[in-house]
Image 1 (cartoon, helix red, strand yellow):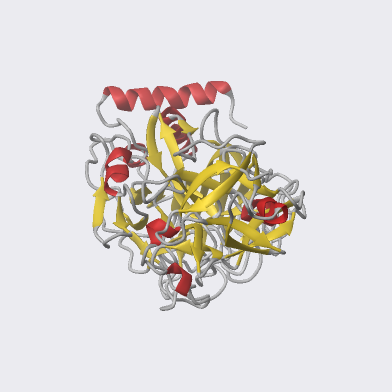
Image 2 (cartoon, rainbow, N blue to C red; image 1 turned 120 degrees about the vertical axis):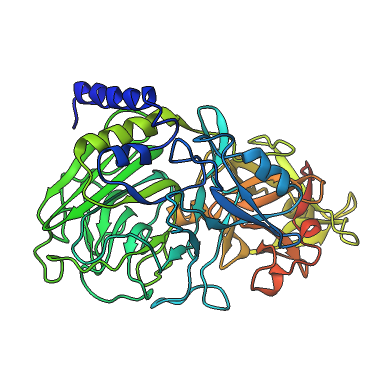
Length: 505
């Protein structure tokens, strides 16, 4: 671990760059000064160059398909979240492009089909919700990129990226609490044909708790390197006890590689310094020395478009050349100075933990129907003061602190204590809490102001493009205009808006 003296020296370098006018908000000025310039710079939260004023990302509105670019509030500044909120008011929005700030045009867009085909009907991956990962930077609101399984971004025709055994560096600021064991939540260098072309054809940051190939200390999650056909925590695809499990809310994950050398670093993106988890020669298995990097860029997926992973990305870059430790220390200091912090995941009429509630549909012709259940099926039923006690209980829900994220909520059945509303394959069920991480995440929901202006729309925490929706009187986790019949854009806003009242019992 770096000493406080080294961190102070890093800050001196940062302050010196500020004094010379070469740093206002971003790390790429530091990399350039260190002789390893950024060849790609991606962020939906802030500019990564002091003078950058261009668009950070693009969003597409669900109501009419119109797009808008979101730029920083000022040169080198934080993203203009208010512009996004205004543009997306009363509808849903997806992140369609994450722009490259380096000037090379290495933008990230919807990942195409690959060795593992994508989940959409045309084989492409899903796009991320524009509101799934709100944060603040120095008190100013911004949005990250919340990657659910099936979501991914890619560029297979990159300018200036490392190929073959050429040296490169990269970092990514991530949500340290959002991960799984699926393959593979990556950011970095990958194959240009979206297929597995062999050992050593990738060099990307991986974050999660997958143990199929490599692992670190404890139970994870870990920062590792995806080098293709292996997640590496050190010299082999086995366990590196020096690669710790991560517990930070905001993580700075760092990978760099050159001719028969590479390193893993990491740290708290909100405070402190970087630590080195591995630094040494390339893995001894065949194909990794020399490397055969191809130079595409991926986010949220594996090199062959494996789409089973989840995670949240805020910012990241890729460089030309092998960055020095001093440069990376200064970038870490810059990230800490951005002051990433959590903010509310909910809006609209407030829910109170422990209260009993009912949820009434607002779609014309269905306003006497409430979310209820029949056995394990979650549906809507007509409920009134004259309904049976059993039906009133089936249409009443106890608000609990979110099982998968305490900033949101879970809904426990009044008549079947211990059972919660959860989604599986985008259909809602009433199931007993089995204590697993997957159940907890599937049973966690974040209310927001109703999309039709009434009550609340209740989105899934782990699939924030998807909302409670009644369709043919059954409850689905629906995506506005998606591929399923229950994703129909017709009356979407009404069908996902519910008035919250006291429970019937």
